[in-house]
Image 1 (cartoon, rainbow, N blue to C red):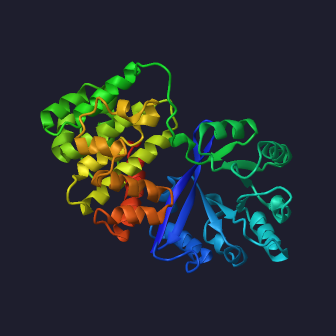
Image 2: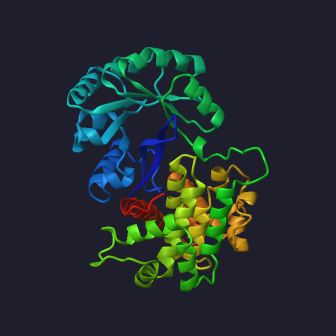
Length: 405
């Protein structure tokens, strides 16, 4: 069993340009018993067989770590050059064999990146063959990064600032000249001044609240969707897309409800509200929230004392504080959440929170913590893996159907 998650790489405007694929064998194995090249090869083959690469990356560039063995043996050539950037781990010994392998890949059109690059290190010999260089913002001084950008940018080498965990680090890395960024800075709340939530946010919060009332009827749902012309259009576009094998055109919300039922329409409308609440913030926030929602929902099948619908809503709302620039308590104040769901979003321990915590740990590549949290609510390691990969497939299909965030 190989676990695969992903971490976004964004530009200065917050647009995702690719995903680094994080991978590991069973969490029962240790770093000593799971060789990096075996896990790396598993990601490459899994990307082509079990999960298509465009599902893992939503059609964007994949950044995949390669070991010396993978590099020398040409495993990278399993993928087309346009699909991925191969990251050379910092522990690779740079010798004539490695230099020649990099030269050959570069001449064949493959893109390479140096991970945790340190100026003056032996990895300098590989610079003629790379398209990206990653720098650890926790380990390298700002002045060093600035000088590195001045030296490499004219050669067409993009600098990726890694471990960007706060807005402050993002700001100095951007000012130093880095054009790409990787880390959790975009998932951290940035509190805004003023006590009034924007009117557009209030209206979408109220719609989200109404959509998730426990006793929502078909008639009330139809009224809610019809009140928003853009939402009505999105629903009709989605149901008439290739994702749904319906042989005739569906022309009304009422007909869509009859064909699909309350659950899917309620879910889609909630997703639409989330995308509007996220307006003006990086779209990756909404993408992460969608993945969490679906993964929590799927994992909820293993949890006896929580409904899958409630878990979907918890995952969906888990980044509302970041989207709105408000403390989570204020962000969810107008939502009709159960006490358990509210507690989970506020970080208080219960079964809903453990499901959410396991999903968040998994998306960060914290495999041991993810499985440990899942096991406390009765979910096993395979369930967690299946929930996350199932969420990736679902989100990819949702985007293809035109209803993604």
